[in-house]
Length: 346
Image 1 (cartoon, helix red, strand yellow):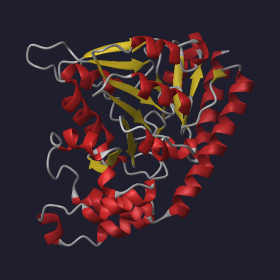
Image 2 (cartoon, one colour):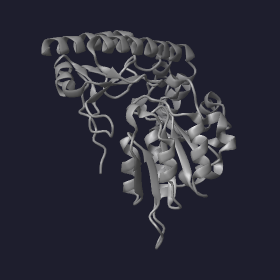
Image 3 (cartoon, one colour):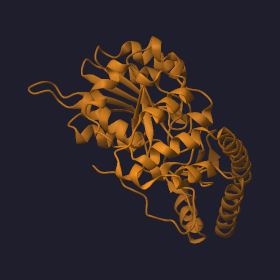
């Protein structure tokens, strides 16, 4: 199984990848422009960037590992914890669905076994089913908070209970790629739950997706096996410089978070007018149920230069599309296109 990358659509409004379509902070561009030739020629230093990220997340630097996007951290986790031992049982990874495809891809790539947990109507977190899926062979439980593609958050108490239930040596990974939008994180609880790792990315809220930088946060003894398998110097100097500049511009971040909230409210109102089902989201996107209008809607707005993501193939998401909600201007354009397509179809 490989990741099915969406088409490389850069000539219109990209609302299909949960990206920050406002772009990064101007301070990032200024910082990148200061890079000297020798800094690009040398292997990058990580101490300053690690300290900046650790300060932002409220942890000590030794409890944070920089990665080339959160994706590299997830692959490192799979390699470290899900490779079958020689002559031993195949390690299992429990994944509540719907979920980020990379969980399955990475698990299968290293020889592990996925144990999917199907969603409930309304996407309420199925804690009892997850606990039931945990066995002595469980080595990783992949959680996403808030969820992608639904935008629905899970209770913090559920993470605590799962942490207590997994066998010794197993890890609970909480993917918090959208934590800035939700306004909550499990990170303050990590000292009490040493078998939990939190994954963060600077792609979404900070607009650094093109530079690929993220991190894993947790106990050093849990991070060490991952550090041992992640390539040395995998985070490039441009990402190192950019993340420090981005973290230094909180005003830019807060403006984007404000626009996301306003955009979601606008989209909810539009869905109500158009009789489209939706789920209240804690992320920078909204899952919209278009039913049998799904294909026509995605095709129609694509013709108008606006790209949305059909998520019908995800468990529990039949007839659903995911719409990024960032810039208010972009959201208004998307709503106008959606209304035009649906009214024409009606």
